Amino acid sequence: MACTALTKGRGLDCNRISGGVKKVFFSVFDEDVSYTYDATNPLEIDAIDWNSTTIYEYVMPLGVASITDTITGSRENGTIFYTPTVNIMLNKLTKEDQNEIKLLAKSKVRIFAELNETLTNGHNVFIALGMSNGMELNAGTMDSGAAFGDRNGYTLTFDGLEPIPFAFLEDYTTAPWDQSGFINEAATFPTTGA
Image (cartoon, rainbow, N blue to C red; front, side, top):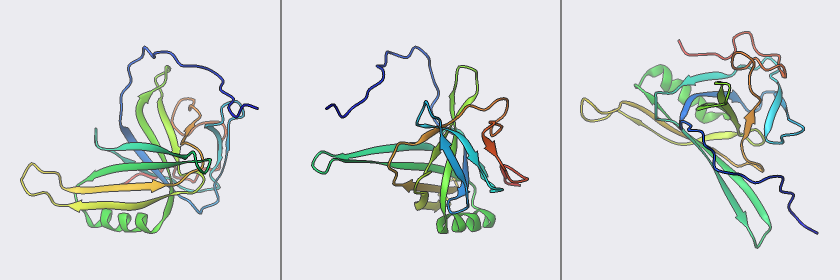
């Protein structure tokens, strides 16, 4: 009996894409959010009940944020798992950011990311990380820089441990988060910085 159920091959993609992350959104993992995967595409989330939960938007400077999902398998044990990692940089040291980073470090979060990559309709691609087990802030630095031209700010690394690869969010209709299956958002959604 075969153990695989491949469904198609892949040719060379003629489209050019852009790398990097535009925005990162955090939601608290233990808040009561439910979600379902698309029946025909098991790695696309097409419904989220936010249960009045807020997500917090962090806009990234160009070229400083990245997402990696590392695949780890063991032939001997017959196991496979995924380690999602999100690296972000925030410019400028502030007491307000210090406090929020301290709170992020105490929290397990789900991370949603808006990529620079676009779909054929021009909409940005959104992905979801840490949906099963959450993501945690496990490394980072707060740097003043030395020379006048050096960066002053934060470098943060979140990681997780998941049974499946990160999921894509179903494409939005006209604006991010307006998908028909996304319901019960908080009054301010997402919440952005002042």
